[in-house]
Length: 88
Image 1 (cartoon, rainbow, N blue to C red):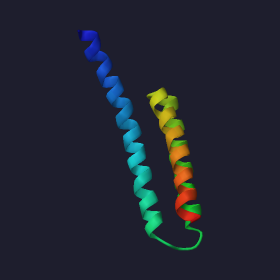
Image 2: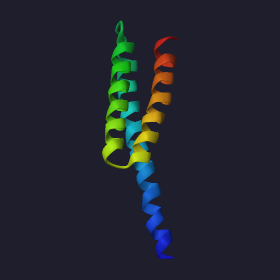
Image 3: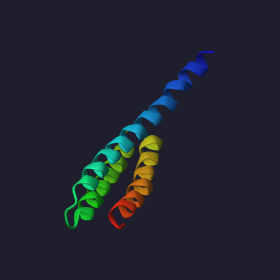
Image 4: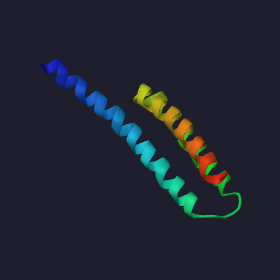
């Protein structure tokens, strides 16, 4: 029974790390989506790249799998929404 309790926080930790990164991604995507200036897509692409780099650096030191998965999710969702929002 104690083994089940020890495994549960690890799953919650993974979801929390990914959730925080997706919330940050959503926040600046909404900000840049509302702001309709020229070349604003470059600003969002820069923020996505910085967030991915931060996740990869954090993966070296703590929670390797969680931050690598988070970097992959931000990469896939971030650039696909970047293209969908700003090229239409």
